[in-house]
Length: 343
Image 1 (cartoon, rainbow, N blue to C red):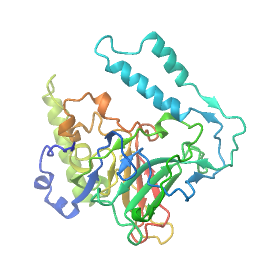
Image 2 (image 1 turned 60 degrees about the horizontal axis):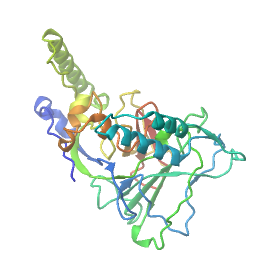
Image 3 (image 1 turned 135 degrees about the horizontal axis):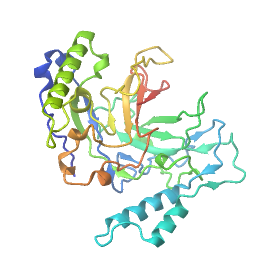
Image 4 (image 1 turned 30 degrees about the horizontal axis):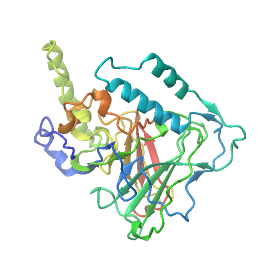
């Protein structure tokens, strides 16, 4: 089933013609629960990984001996979803609540070495044939695979993520690894994605306002302030939130490839390649939700009648405090180390 982004509430280029020079595209991935196979672009699905190639691991020394079991996390989600899907007396029964409590328990793994290799979790794989805004890999690589360590325990502050990106030629993969290694426990349930099929859709996007020319950004701010003042003067129970450049007209929420990064949590800062100093491009956005209260105008037409709590978080992935992870890549050489920002 396709997913279709509603037309924007107004033509932003008609209001601000200068934006035409900054217009870009991004591909909304629209992940939804499903059963993808090795040959499909997916989130949380099986990876097209060669049987004779070592699986990505995190080798950084950090705590890993205590956490939740991935199988318990998936079972917890299944039990809770089934309980609330019942027509009669929806919600967990007393027996189900006891089971949910057991499934939420953390476990300690005796003998887990802080510096030993820790299997990463396969987060997503994207084929260029499916994703219009996915850049070319080195040579003729057509498949991007994304992994992460299931603990926020990296870097000098011991709160950072650790990602691994791998480009490959899909046609070169022979026998596929069908049972990749998995971590025994993870640092949080948001590290474990639910298998999702993708419904890629390319849409128009514009840069974050703070990165536009100063005069244009000031005009956009003034326009938003005028709408807010008007809304306050005419406020009643039927009044909707006034439009905003950030949440309605520029950068869509959810998982997407290419386009422009949002900097709504921090001020924009340079994302230059640490190898060749070239300004990096946004490669992938990993979002905790497909839309929220402020970005509901981007909710696909096909999901308008669905309850938000059931379809706005299909991947079950959580980034930081319900944020988004923007991954940047070097346009000169995709093999150069990537960088990222959490917003």
